[in-house]
Every structure is written in structure tokens, then in C-alpha cells.
Image (cartoon, rainbow, N blue to C red; front, side, top):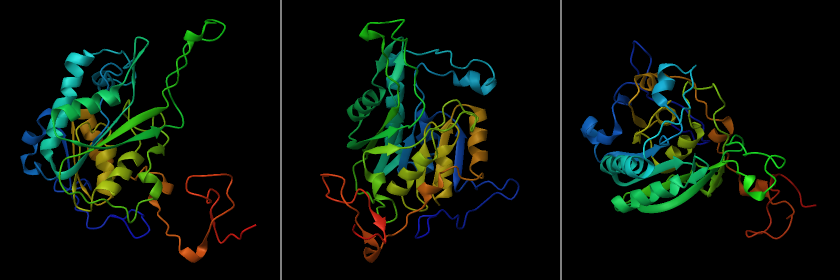
Length: 319
């Protein structure tokens, strides 16, 4: 749960005496496809407050190879047909998310464009279109995740390819689509930073080798949405739980969590990670109130939409 300053504190966490892990009443990581999530967890149908995930791409990583032996090449780009197989599979997952969510619950999908044989597929937009065409989701917004570092290499060089078409831009962003199932929802604006409600987030990706998974997303990402869109003791679900960032963040924040994965290895990782230390950056955990007498706007650097305040600071005096 969160204190008034936004720091994480685990209160009344029930654990298994043998393992120290959260009890099944708080955490379920299931070796099961989320295509039938409502059958695997029928008691949670219509009770989940947030479904958040980053789905696998159709061509980028062989997860079975990585789970079997991560020392071998798992970036084999074995793929399924994007339009005929992959997108319909994703639609079935979002339909199950609809069944699991309570009225007013949110679906959050993180994805980037997909590079395949020199072409970029607009995966975030395709996933959004598929979801909206299947159920009566209400589109809330897109958050652009600027990854700060990392990206796909630039193709060629000016010397090798002097013509303009040699260039291939780095994939430095991903898109987070936020949808809501019709119904009343309760947002948590009181103890979340104002910048989290903006449409661009600067978050560094997970450093290589930190997590035993080929494509983990930073725990900071689900941490933010869980704090923004849920309340303590509510259920959070990840249909592609992978390395367990979502379920870990949910448990740390005093929520209940359910994750699905078809790999036994990643199921085990998701379960064990829940009892480990949080990897959320400390700056993301703190929400420090600024009292009016201590807030003095600095000199404006120029015209801004909201006026002066670009160099705000505590206790400063006007120059």
C-alpha cells in the first residue's frame, strides 16, 4: 500500500509459511493461456479492475527457445501470419480481458511498431483498431513511452548507401493504449504525480541481463498505471505475465494480482519475483507535497502555454 508520501509499504500481506511468497488469495500466476482466462479463474470474472500487458510480437522472439536455453539464439524471427493469425489471437485476448474486467475497469496495452523484412508494422494502432472493433471499449488515450536508450540499429551508412533511402530510424518509443470498459471508474489523482497523467513518459528500459526474460518491460510502467487506475485490494491482471513485472508491482502496492503464461519457466519466475525487492526507481515512489508558501515560480525562459514556472524551485526568490 501507499503512505501519504507515496512510498510503498506492504501492509497485511498474507504469505505462505514455506516459501514466504504471497498467498493464493493475493497472487495467482497460472500456467495457462489467457485465451480462456475466464475459464481458468471463473471466480474473478467481472471483478478485475485493471488488465495491463505488453504482448509478444508475431516475429521477434522465440520464447520457447529462450525458456529452454537462453544461451542459444532465440531471436530467430520465427513468425505467424500477422493479419490472419496474430491479430485475431490478440483480439481473443482482449475479449477475455473484457469478460474479466468489472464495469469501469481499464485495459492497458503496451506495444511498439514491429520491424519485419525492412517494413514497419503499426502494431499499436492495429491492436487498438482490433479491440475497438470487437467490443464496446471506450478509448481513453495513448501514452507515448520514450525509452531514453535502446532501439533498432540504423541501416547502412552514407558511404555504403549515399542515397536518402538508406536511412532507418531507431525505434525509441512504444505506444500505450488505454481503454475502459463502460461503467463508473475511480481514478487516483491524490497521491500520483501530475506528470504521470501527461501523454509522454520518459522511462529507461530494463538493462540486459537484469531479468531472465528476453523482453521484460520496466516495473515502473505497471507501477504507475496500478497506482493511477486501481485502489488497494483490487485485482490486477496480466494476460502475458512473462517475467512478472505486473504481478510484482501489484503485490507491492497492496493489490491482488493474477498473471497468465504458457511457459512453466516464466510462471516460476513470476511467482518468485513477487517476494523480491522492488526494481521501481526510487524517484517513482515519492510524491512530495509542495505547500503554497514554499512554492515560488522561477523566471520564465520564454512564452509557455501555462505561463512561467519552467524553473520552479522551493524557497527561491525572484531575481
